[in-house]
Image (cartoon, rainbow, N blue to C red; front, side, top):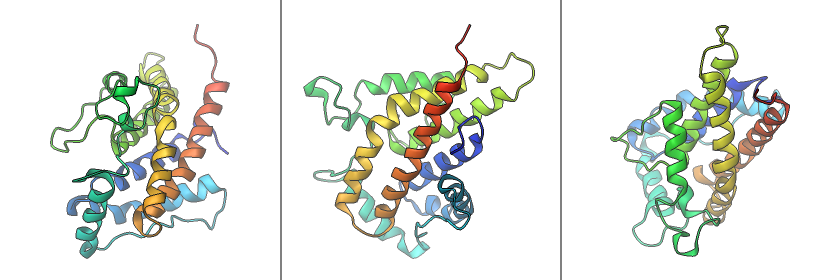
Amino acid sequence: MSTIDADPDIVAAAAVVLSHWWSYPTQSEVETWPDLVAVAERVSRHLSGDDQAGASLPIPRAGDVDEMLARYERLFVGPGPVPCPPYESCWRTDVVAYLRHSLMGPCIADLLEIYRRLGLNLDPVAGELPDHVAVEFEALAYAVSQADEGANDGSGNNSAATVGPDATRSLVEGHLSVWVPGFCHAVAEQVHDGFYADLAAITLEWFARIQRAVETASATSPEPH
């Protein structure tokens, strides 16, 4: 298994794919997904170590969007009880009881600070909260790319050399690892076939390997002076 330092483009690519596929499936969003198939296949081959492996996700056709939207809203939006809210705040158990299973929990402030340090701003048009699963994976992809950029910068003055790795560790160890596995298991319990069942499975597989890569990179990184 490569470390994040050895092959950051694979980790970033995995995060980009997951960010898109967990996004609200509007017509314009779904139309971009076929372009991600080759990327997803490359990620699967690398993370599995199998040259024959490929992404098993079915890519919806344009005519499937209405059905996908209906399933997305039933699982993740409502109205009524939402079985699998795609927000970190709803899954944190390390908060006082009255804040559990609620939106806009304490994790939001930390995420916004990570995004600020990365120079990222939320898109007001998209309208997603900072702790939406797609937003966190998008931020992870950017943090990894910044870490790689900083590592390859010869000037020694690029703040990305510090911000990228720190943000990557914070996003994976302090946020995504805390809730994404439980979220994916909940999705798998609700849907047993189709796009979101496959997406939950592949997210669990990819993220477990991403998490190990980040932990390995953290363990082998020199201590700051």
